[in-house]
Length: 306
Image (cartoon, rainbow, N blue to C red; front, side):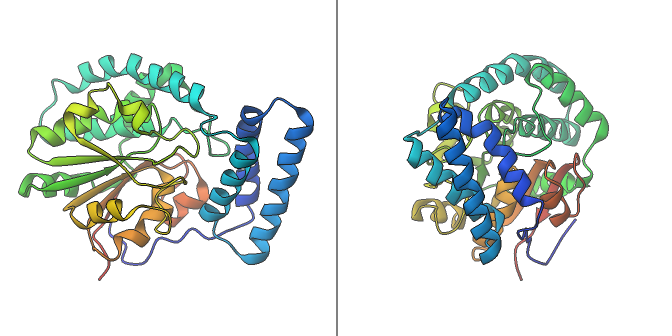
C-alpha cells in the first residue's frame, strides 16, 4: 500500500480520554500519595483543556504533559519495573518463537520474523483499551502468523532488502518488544545489511533505552544509537542532529510502533528515505490515519515524498 499524502493524526475528542486513561497507569507510579495524585490529574485536565483550545496535535500535547508530570514528581523512569517484567516475558517467549521460525525459508521466514516483531509491539502500556498479556506472547505470535498483515507491504520490503545492500535504520519502540525484534535483526544481518538500532534518549513510558539493550544479542547484530529525544516517537524538534544524520545516511528505515507513525513522517520527508512502518494497530485514530482498523497487523511502505 502506497500513500502519497502525509500521515496526519490530528487532535480529536477521543484523544482526551485516551491520554487520561494512560495516566491511570502513570500517576500511581509517580506517587502513592492520594493528594498528589489528585493534583497531577487536575494538572492533566488543565493541559488537555489548553491543548484542545489551541488545537495541539495529540503527540506533542501528551509529550509536554508527561514531561511536566515527571519533572514535578522528580522521576526519570517510573516504568522501570514494568520494563523489567516485559523484557523477562519476551526472553521467556523468544526460544519457542525461534523454534517456529527456524525451519522457514525466504519470504516465509522473513514474514515470520516480522510477526515476532509485531508480537513485541503488543507490549504497550499507553493505549486506551489495550492491555498487554505478557504470559501469552507465543500465542499472540501464532495468531499473527494465522491472521497475516491487514496492510501488507512485506513482500516489497523483502524485495528491497534482497535487491541491494546498505544502511538500515531500525527505530525501536518498547522494552520487551526489543527482544522480539531479534529474529528480524538476525535476518537483516544475515542478508548483508548494516543495521543501526535506535532507542530513546530517555524513556517517556516503557520505551527501550540503551540500558535495556546492554548485554543482549542486539549488540552483536547492530550498532546501537539513541534518538536524543525524551518523547513519544521521534519528534523533529526533539531529536539530535546525530540522529537526523543517521536518517540521511540510511537506505531503508524500519519504524516500529504507533508513536513513530505520528512523528517520523516529518523527518522522512527531507531525505525521502524509503520507510516501512511495522505495528499492531491499537489506537483507532492512528489506525484510521494509515488505512487500518484497530487490531490490524500493519506493514506499511512509505516510499518518500515526491
